[in-house]
Image 1 (cartoon, one colour):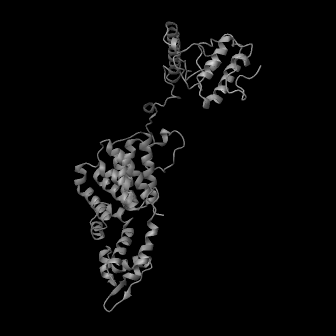
Image 2 (tube, rainbow, N blue to C red; image 1 turned 120 degrees about the horizontal axis):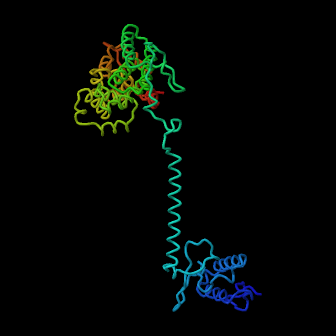
Image 3 (cartoon, helix red, strand yellow; image 1 turned 90 degrees about the horizontal axis):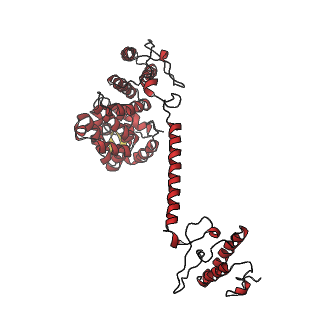
Length: 418
């Protein structure tokens, strides 16, 4: 038999239909071509071949109700005066689809859908019940669910001094000191620091003390005291990495309402952010501060330092440096040289041709002219002798002051410049 959709024929030749085709299939093909535009004809031919081949291979060519079967998707013309059933968008098999949308709301279809939904709901409920039994046993298994309250230990060690070792397994109560012993340990460490000032030893002992507090889940005013004291000692010895660890923990402890010195350490935190040039955290801190915090004298000093740096007021900055409360001066010491380089650049631009060493020493907050000269020498700037005093040629000094800023460009996660 000839191909009914051959290239030689622009129309549909009924005589080319296979004699095995039922009359309903022939009418289906005719209706399909009648409802298809010229530009979609190639696509329709491909779809018809697939539909008829599938029906023939599955031996359903005489079973399918071709008169009511939806037309292929390529059909894009609706004949006038005759409704055309378009294909469903979702189909499990084009050749096996029977019926039309007209019987979608029939009682039989509704009943089938209702039974299917009920079966799916029952299956989902059964699966959920099985999962619940698997994941949440009636009697919790300690191997599967960690019960922190039950697993919290109470130490039995009575040694006041103990080296810090990073835990690689569950803590042994015989190696952990209980709270009364930890109180005595803190008193001993205070005395040792005053008498010996051996930071390597003190830091190791404080880390061990903090570890014993952590594994026993001790969170009280004593915990705050330990972290505050360690943070201050770290600042005094310029260990900003250890200080930052204590500062982070103290912020959490203060949020729990424990007593301590939150204003003092809030001021330190602001100064630390100024050192690391962490503008995002500075803005976050300012946005979350209360009015009382902003008016606290210690916090206000830190905010004034920030304002002086933001506006480039180096004269105000160095005056604030000289009057820093508590241990704020130790933190500012870490970025004072950076601010001195910035101030020196401004002095070089504003004062020509030269400035006396005495004036520069005062403006950059040095105690002596010798200390100022040592700082300038580290930048490769040498003073010249004048008639009455030493002076600096500001035009020659500017390139060296600008080049010195390169070493302050990056700060690592612990706050160390590299």
